[in-house]
Image 1 (cartoon, rainbow, N blue to C red):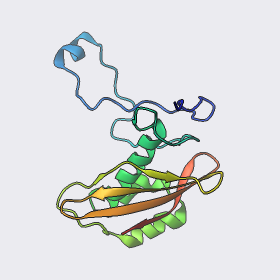
Image 2 (tube, rainbow, N blue to C red):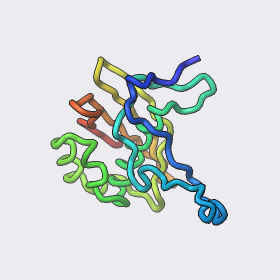
Image 3 (cartoon, rainbow, N blue to C red):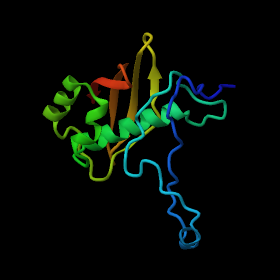
Length: 159
């Protein structure tokens, strides 16, 4: 059975906000705290460990990787501005993203699947996801390297 990453490995990792809106009764009673990072990507830190839990659920690290891949897929489909992921890419990768423009053609919002993760060496994570775009699916691969403060995407590719 896998354990969740230790606190020292994952500083500042918070659970994602609930997808369900609060009921009106909760708001009037003052029981609803404002959601942390509402509308923002929770990509500040990536855990040192990746891989599925014993039950098959995604680890917190996989959820973060999937969130980054989802944002990148939306940018490549022209549904989000590139600035949304600017802080998670190196200058070179961000320039490539701007030059790439719209690479994913999708009649609806693209939806990414579970990440397939590899760690070729310490401080490097490479992963790919299947991007469901309607009738035709695509693949998006990203390479992350540990920077001074957080992980940065140094390269991406889609096919």
